[in-house]
Length: 526
Image (cartoon, rainbow, N blue to C red):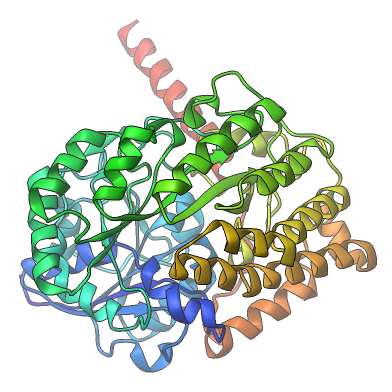
């Protein structure tokens, strides 16, 4: 097998950035799997050029020249930039492959613009492609392993690629680690809801932590597990065996049901500085928040008490909520969240809007069957700023009026002052204030308010959201053109549009094929 020149591009951003918050933190959102692919390609004897795009690089200048194969990893909001890059690279004779969340969520669409699209990815799958990476056009080939890999290269093996990404961050340098994949909970909107929980070898974790303590002055590890600490004692035993207490700073997502006080004491002792538990809803998912059948204000009180306890041990606590779920109606969900903000000043609430990302979760089929999924362009499909699911119990205007009101309440000067008083650490206090005044706070209010105005004053936008037309409003076309800049001209024809019901159609076609095969088999036996 000849030695290939391979490019790997991790698209953290989907457009150039100027704001302070992404400059400080974007590099910390680097994905782990592009680094893993880079290691596997080098182990197979190939030359690798690794690029992390945080929004502050000149991507045109950083693109590798004369490459045989380029892997691109992208979230869905980066899909249109990924499509444009693929088109540009393919025009130069390069074979392109797409991985990451967008590839898993929208494979049917991505196959139009890439030679290969990856679902679950393991080393065998990558090595097979490296052995034969021929062009696949006009429609690409979908590749997926039967399940997530049972082991991945650790920090030691990935260090060269981690270091190049860390060099882009001037504030908090976060090393991505992964101790497990999958999640025991089945939240209907989550991409990990159907992925079986699987832990990785603890010896690799211990080796990586020992390496980091020797290599960095004060390592900061971001656990990318969908739910850190499912095997809590095993994880903490490994950490305590590998490194001295509080010698590494840790960040991670964990369910409230895992965060008992005895465990919080242990997390604090071992350097955990940030925890992001998911409450999601005041009406559903009581198992995840350890509230059982409690709903509404009863759940607010119990969750607030629990989160206030967490804040006594962990300096930075972000509690995540999802709005737009079918279980919600009227002002109550928003008013309950305001009460939570008042009762829990030491935590920052993170708000997401319900998004049906293609085939990320099985329940998305039900939204599609009900014709409730909008064909919003991928470039803006970020659950922090938009929902593509028509609310079941709200009009668009009522929903955004209530959500804007809640967001303003959450980052008001009164709320920010309460947080500063409740948090006694300088860095977490600054991070929370920066979030409130940056594009992640006031910038989002500006975005929501603009959309709300368009729903009133722009018939094109209103008809689009009410599904009276699927023609993309000029407002969105202009934004995407501006964000893509020089790559706009490389965006393939038709790539602004996608079929929002592709998952449902593929499921229907799959059942028909299965039924047909079963019938033919029966006829043969007869």
